[in-house]
Length: 171
Image (cartoon, rainbow, N blue to C red; front, side, top):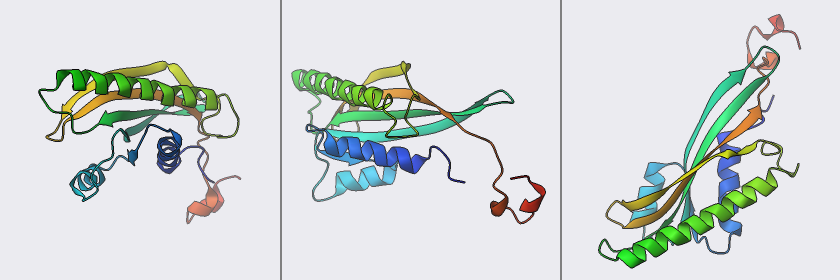
């Protein structure tokens, strides 16, 4: 049985958002090593970039229904902003906020469309929080980070074929 939601589905979705948004120039997933390698590469990081940096879940619900709530976080970052360029820092943070809210707007609208099954009716805009990112590392990253939750139905049923003694479970 394929699960309704997985890390890979969310990662692919964020990468697609980054690709389709006309202002976002780069994407990086949750791997710290991938991000470090991207920074150190000859091409470097293109700015602004969308970074999907946190994904965790929590089961909740009663006997009849279980939800596998996911908390997701992404940031929109600008690179190369100098530590003493205060107007540039404010501009980067302001622009990152605008782009991030546009990304959240798309997530909100798409959550009302059945095309993406794991997102459909699962985005809770009341859980959105955001905070500025100020001078992360030597590379002068400035921007905004955004956190939100999805509430996904997760049937906790055993898949007999996945167990050597699977015949003990009803199908």
